[in-house]
Amino acid sequence: MSEPILEKFGFDTVFDGGGNVTQSKARQKRFFSAEEVEALRARAFSEGEQKALGEMAALQARALAEIARSAEEGLGGLARIAHAHREGSAALALACGRAIAGEVLELFPQAALQKALESLAREIESEPKLMVTVAPGRAEGLQEILSATAAAAGFTGQILVRDDAGLTSAAFTLDFGDGSASYDPDAATQRIWDTLKAALATEGLHAEPLDPGVKG
Image 1 (cartoon, rainbow, N blue to C red):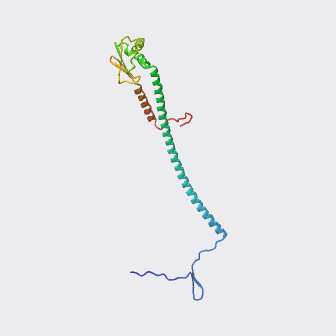
Image 2 (spheres, one colour):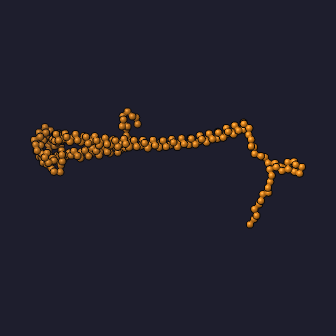
Image 3 (cartoon, rainbow, N blue to C red):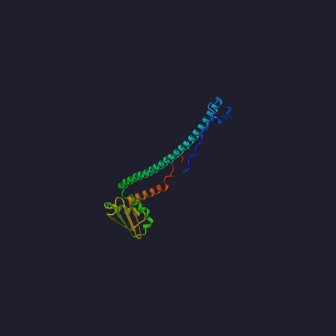
């Protein structure tokens, strides 16, 4: 094992035998002039200022990024709320329309059936027989009403009316030769709702603003 190398004790100032200085280390300056102090202060201030400005710029960049992220999340949330509002409004409008239509059909139960006969005038005019199927309790008095409507539409064949327990409300079926037509208020409402939902789903979150005066 090698012995550690010991450094000999030295002096900052060395004198010769005559008292003359032969070696001297430069001492650190302990006192500064006012100009030097001011220069040091200005440099320290400048360095501190630059560091502070750099840190402030970094904080601003992070703050702006956070604001942008929050704004994006907020806008996405608003779009989802607006979309849900549209779905709710469509469902409410459909429910109101269904309620009104139901009341009308209760007051005028033969109206839809008469309109169907008028619309099918060309298809049934040459047929010898027309079979009309309605919900239970709806057949009474219907024979005479439909006969008059069919005659006005040019149909001179026989009209037979029967009820079917499988039909409800104002639903009905018309059978004529090789063709037929039917109407079910509940099924019609469901088809309308399915169409509305499909349209809203296609529209997604990119719809026009709820307020027409707001530009997207």
